[in-house]
Image (cartoon, rainbow, N blue to C red):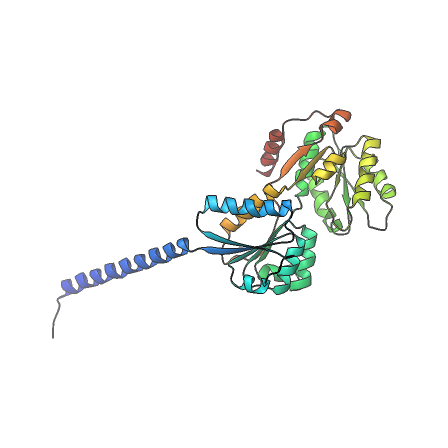
Length: 328
């Protein structure tokens, strides 16, 4: 039998502790290296193969390859093409749906992989999650997320203050999918030192009879994007009344801008792609789903309308800087 004196036992204990710590650090380093070195499979499911969709897909892939070279492998499926989608979904680490139809198709299969839906409105995302998951909360729990196309209305309100310096009355048009936001918007507009005026219309209403009384009393008018309400006829009447009463409109699409709005805040395919790439890079495996507003956006003006309304426009960067200060 071997006997150790106390000092020898202490030395042995210290050596054992050092060996144990070294082994632990090696294990942690090896695991971290393996995680960092692992490749992630991303399946893009797109509604169409038209130019906007392809631009989003290509731009996301390019940004990921630049920021995290060789970390991702990509697979793309267009729902119009022949494909065993369920088999594709089962083999992926992430699924990105591009467009409403793609989201509808993928949600119906309930894949285990986290899903990010882009190029979709907030209302469409809410309707589809309720249809396939029972509620938007259940979809979030299943790691379903979206970066919706809808711009934060606060950006339009901030822009209204900057474009029309003497504005006091802000007219806001709501529809069936957005009317629930009136209390929130009323509080924000009031806190911004402006007077809110709302008009809520449905598909059964005569737009000119409902919109004109509010628009005529406003210094600036903001229609909220509502897929259940906004159509070509409604937009035409808004812009017609805007011209008649010399009230600028701040819209949510480039087509609206070209048709006669003073300004528009909207997401281009490049903006959508940048938001998507940043989300994928920052994603944590344990994260639950969420609904995100676009961080990247385009801001554009109709110079002819500005001249007609005698509104002097600053540079686009000036307005962006003001938005950033407001956020801070």
